[in-house]
Length: 244
Image 1 (tube, rainbow, N blue to C red):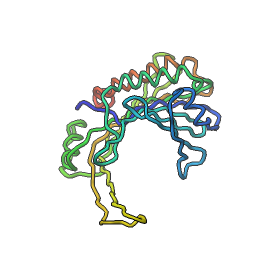
Image 2 (image 1 turned 180 degrees about the vertical axis):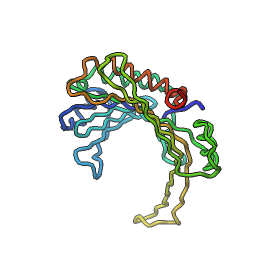
Image 3 (image 1 turned 30 degrees about the vertical axis):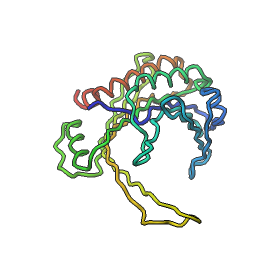
Image 4 (image 1 turned 45 degrees about the horizontal axis):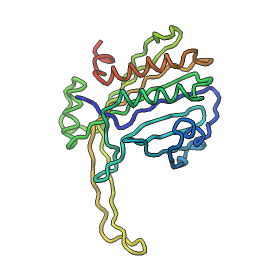
């Protein structure tokens, strides 16, 4: 299966549990681009800034000790509000890598993570089960639900032998329910809510280093290695992490 991405991300961590100012990060990495700032309910000191950037949505998320840059697909105008998957994953990750390396985010960072959230829409539960059976080389009973398979195969970094890299793959079958309301004058509901379902299988790739006591000496080199590993896992995650 040729996986497409719903989102790609690079996260930068620092030992100090201090959150960066979200709009300041946005202005540095996406200058002259409009954004909306939203606090995340229930998560103290966590904020998200987002805005359109070409054919994708750019997102900056800040929380204590972690800053994340992401590109997501633009939500569909028709149907469930899911980001439209995109194929140019290497280009998107390369651009994020350059934005991170060219910014102040890498100063004193002791951990980085490169993440790709891959997705494939399906026609229903049986279709999701069939795709995951093929991907994982398992005989899953038709109609199985709540399927999740996660594995981590750590390796030593080639850019720095003192750094250990986690390579995590998580396959899942998911279903989303979406409620549509038709609202009339004075916000009165004109008809019964319409509930629709969207089925899809996902593969989340998360390549990150074990946190260091001090700063990473060669952040660009480590990011290059993590990006290359994510792209290789996209081609055949099962072969690299499971069938060894």
